[in-house]
Image (tube, rainbow over all chains, first blue to last red; front, side):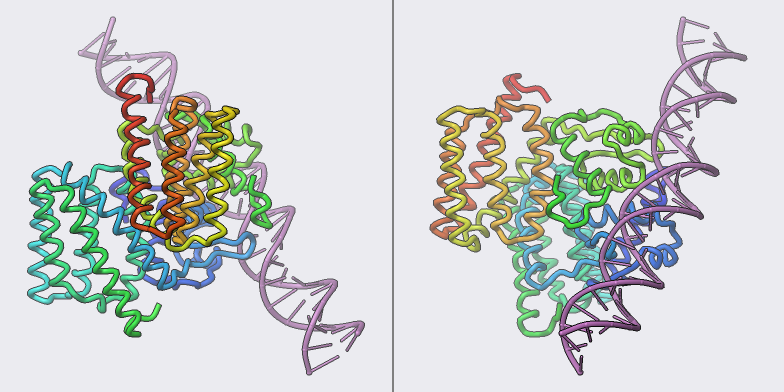
Length: 226
Length: 226
DNA sequence: TTAGCCAATATTGTTGACAATATGACCTCT
DNA sequence: AGAGGTCATATTGTCAACAATATTGGCTAA
């Protein structure tokens, strides 16, 4: 997984990564009650590192533990998912503003190049849904790190995105609106390139708000069930 | 500590609480490198639960671990502290807006009563600094929970406040401006009582921004060293 | 004298066994 | 027959010993 990042990669790190991706990808379903020994055999781990990883994941809100009763993957309701988007709105708004003030010209150029790639993928409709989802993640990821706000990036990348992606995988292809989202991305990058932090913040907030309303509408229409 | 909250309280929970408060109170200084066995003897714990707690604390960003090299309390620079206030500004702004929409009348009445208590404490100047700091925490705590936004409250109470309080203890008495802060608190509660979410958000953001500028000024003047 | 290397040591990472507790089935009593 | 309680079981929480690795001090050589 991220063996290359850290020179020494402990079993606990391994356990953490395995479980996190398993949860995000839905291999461990929300609400599912899972035993430690089952997880151990499944990921070929021992209980010590596993428990350490469980502690981290609990702290990040991806699962809940009841003493002596076991651990289960957190299940987020539709309203709670909407609340996540409200949080994203203000936090990523801040990230966009600070990114406009602090990103290097090179980073901005890379960001624009990323959008070009996304555009080609959408046009060619190659694995549209997957790339759209991953591309969207990539875009927001770059802006979060570009904010140069360590804690902000940590909270976005470490907490919120994993929970959102967890439902992205579930809602999968039906999120739709790729062209429109790409257009919004472009305008945000334009504002960043012009070093207009205030505008970047406004556009980012509106972008996430639109995404939230899009999902909300689909839920109301019964197209999506959570 | 919080033995009463959870019917069964594991050693790992105990270790987590002990370490967290020790870090926040400054008993474990930032940058200090601490050994596991030392912590075990100090808090009368064994290494298993301790390591689980260390994992949680690392995940929350209160300490950093390097494999085989040990664990040290995170040391936040002045600029990083300022970044924390930027995050608080947007997140607590959101919390205030949602609190205005969702708090019960009873909760609002309690909040006002809390401010009355704070006012008496300031007037009587009884342990002004301590009560002002704790009172401020209490105020923000109530609004975070009043937002009815689970994740938002979790992030504020579980992540940000601990880091901010860590420095509150260090800067201790010199944060000052209690009357002015109280007045700002009152106006925020007024907006909440009138169910004016937009105004509550604006006032909260301005309140935290003022607190940030206050600390920033003191740092520039050399009154505070971080 | 200083820079680089090597080994001893102390600390962390890991493992498996032991103790404590929640769950669920079975039985009894109403 | 249904509700309540009790006991067996399986799972989690805890512990202490073992293995692996980073640090530190000393040593050698330039």
